[in-house]
Image (cartoon, rainbow, N blue to C red; front, side, top):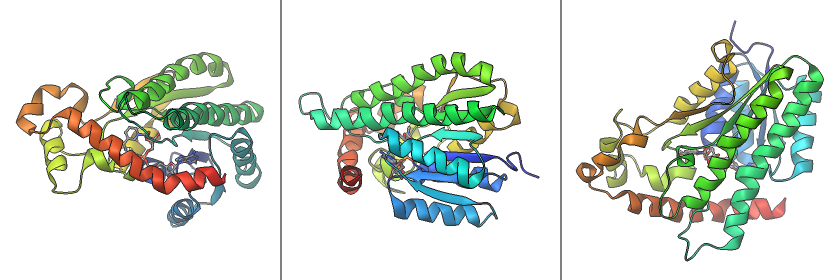
Amino acid sequence: MGHFDDRVALITGAGSGIGRAAAVRLARDGADVCIVDIDQDGADETASMVREFGRDAIVARANTASKGQVQDAVARCADELGGVDIAFANAGIARGAPLLEMELKDWQDQLDVNLTGVFLTVQAAAQQMAKQGRGGRIVCTASLAAETTGPGIWSYSATKAGVRIMVRGWAQELGPHGITVNAIGPGVIDTPLAAGLAGGEGGPIRQALEIRTPVGRVGRPEDIAGLVAFLCGPDGEFMTGSYLIMDGGLRDARARQDEAGTPIAEERMAMAMQSMDRRRKLQPLIDER
Ligand code: NAD
């Protein structure tokens, strides 16, 4: 018996990184999973991983910034898997750039996915949960960047701070329906989105980060999946409207930057550059939808 036997989880951004790790973790603990992602190949791969645990998986390809596509995904989840008990509004993008160079399109794309996409996902999932009348758990991915920021990352931070505050209002509204909703704040997690920040295994950026992080390593998607499992499991029942940071202690580790040798500002810029690379891969998929 797993914590999530007979539960159905809908996860956005489940075709990669943190979303994929959460899909695998919840499936391991008994959940069937609706994988929502704009990237069909990544989503299909995650579906195969879920099925390895003997759980059902469906792929609902969608751009979370589209109300119609999100509603279709939730409807398919309910029809084909029997409902929505857990929703993880996790899809996000990083389009950071310095103020003097920031393009309006990058600003808008970030708002569309990181804020509107989370709102649309939570709204559609909560409507389905309220209709079912058996409660539910919702987790939204904010970021450590919801409370720390810097050069090239302030626009991303603004979207994540928005998620962090929205869940507090939603928690008030959804409590009477037996639905909890929380935000999580991952630090630097080794996924394609954060490749510029996390650096490569054994490389100088990674080593600097390992020195500066109190637990001595970069975060893994599986770390965050464990936090999601906690919030959606029996031990998370009394938690709602919260924002939980999981960052290996990085938030308060600025004082260690000299020892590490790599200025934080440079890392922020590395992230901004990385997000441009990631955009080259995702943008055709977003434009197509
Ligand atoms: P990732 O790039 O590995 O995965 C993100 C997934 O979201 C991808 O599969 C991508 O195709 C999908 N996606 C992007 N835009 C979409 C859209 N419009 N509609 C549907 N799917 C879309 O990145 P990740 O690191 O796993 O990021 C997951 C979440 O965690 C994001 O919200 C990100 O901002 C947040 N986050 C990541 C870190 C980190 O260090 N990796 C830290 C804090 C917060």
